[in-house]
Image (tube, rainbow, N blue to C red):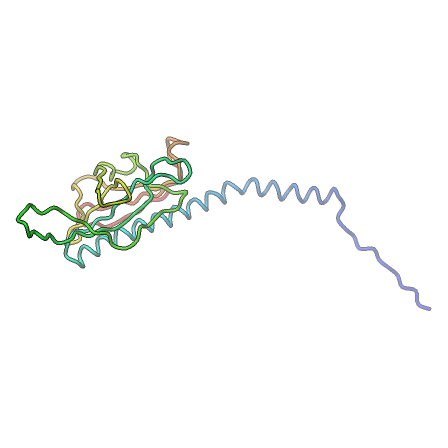
Length: 204
């Protein structure tokens, strides 16, 4: 008769499990800000790309249709606290004037495509020191249901309707970042060349 020998398998003791869980917890706590920062940076890049794409699209449509086109940046209420934020974008093109009554023709812009909404956690700074486009001033149109806006206009040759010899830019940052800290740490600035409309970005 053959006797079978049973070897007991070593297991984790309670103390060892506590140590392992504690180590994992410490690593998670230490890495959380880094992971959150990476996620915020990714959202900022995505939002800045959306803004750049809409700007280039407005410029292209102006050239294609041989007319003025503009990208409107709307001041919309935040869904959480109702605070006005710059987060919605839409392209408009200038409709040719139809002067059938011999009255002075006025610029009539028609929307092209749908509204682009940036990530709920990202906004365009309304501080003129961080977004010089604020100096263009807000406009309102009775036919525009999205409220007041800032218009970045391009002429039929693709050149932007911006005052030369001064920098034009807008800065995207995390929601309420300017309220938490006077110095932004995580942002993307999109610069618009006043002569050519070329875009450049800067992200620290």
